[in-house]
Amino acid sequence: MRDADLKPETTVVTESALAVESCREYHRSASGNPSSMACRRAATRVLFVDNQAVDFLRYRMVLARKLREAGFDVHVAVPQEPGLEDILSQGIPAHVFYIRRKSTRLLDELRCLISLFRLYRQLRPTLVHHLCLKPTLYGGISARVSGVPAVVSTLTGLGYAFTARTLKMRVMRLIVEVALGFSFKHQNHRVIFQNRDDRDRLLVSGIVPGDCVVLINGSGVDLSLFMPEPESGGPPVVIMASRMLWQKGVGEFVAAARALRLRGMRARFVLVGEPDHGHPSAIPVPTLRQWHDAGDVEWLGWRDDIATLIAQSHIVCLPSYYGEGVPRILVEAAASGRPVIGADFPGCRKIIRDGQNGFVVPPRDVEALAGAIAQLIESAPLRATMGARGREIAANEFSLESVIEANIAVYRSLLANPGGLKSPREDDIGAHASCLCHCGDATEPR
Image (tube, rainbow, N blue to C red):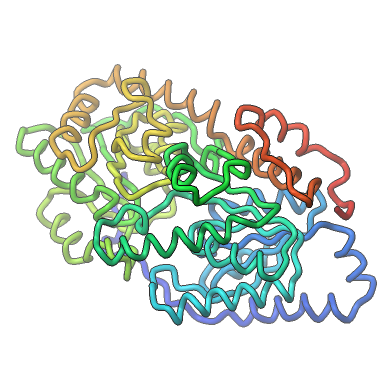
């Protein structure tokens, strides 16, 4: 594994003149060119709403391109931030809306709600797909009020709002639950969950109606990019890649690494990622540097070559108790033929079959985590067996193609039945989607 600058990369968010002008040009051409308007009306307009442009590029751009190839008029709404120009460069109109991911200020929340309401009234999409909690919350309310015909909401885990134990967050959680209940009452709506724990929690509480629930296995993994590679020589490398948040189990990973070093175990322990600055659970940069300087772990900061880092590793950990959907790093590690270790918590246990492709350990249990890591460090045959099983699970259940097909099946069910239709059964969604993805009538108005 090559060394990297230990200072996390930071990007100054500046307004993109290209993005703003592109959006304006789109609206000018649509309003002033009758033939352009007729062409756009011929296709169903789908709008994705995400709280980060970079995340959309990483996790949803392939889906957006597939929809466009199928004849849909695809648009994306993201905050004004780096990544917007990359979306535009791929020929997809991008629109800016106001959102502050980590803010709980009433003014910021109202501005987000109003921003989305105005966008929906202006763009008039046929279907809106909200990604993550805040777009689901405020976008769902805006869609109901503005009359969007069809709505999809993907909850990629319930996150900090549903797992934090502070009094402030408990009060905030009650407010969020009430608002979600309102947004989920759209008559033609599907809520996509990535794991059964999150689905059951909101079903039992009555927040989400049972007839609009769909379960899809995460965001999918590109099996051609994440391929099994032979282990490299030298001491085993144990990596943890995530945002540097306490709730991700970073502190427990460092403590386990320290304990194993004290036992004389030869291995490298590597942290990959940077703090989510402003997040209540963010780990201070000086703490991360202190751990690195003390030799407890190697902190590489943010990296964009995660496939290479996984290939250079022997074991991948994510002892998170954050409230994940399906942690992408664990799916990518499994696809790469690496054994995985995670906390017995929603999301992590979706991809890990305890004792088959890795180990599930109790949340916040440093001793159990250290024990699981030690077992894998000491046994190359066990790593190989678990890695092979992980590749099989990733290919059978988490492939990017199957996730894209399942999403398109949801869109089709809503667009074909604007008056409301029960969601496809979870068992059938993959088979249903594989036929729908090849329909030839995607450009016809619905």
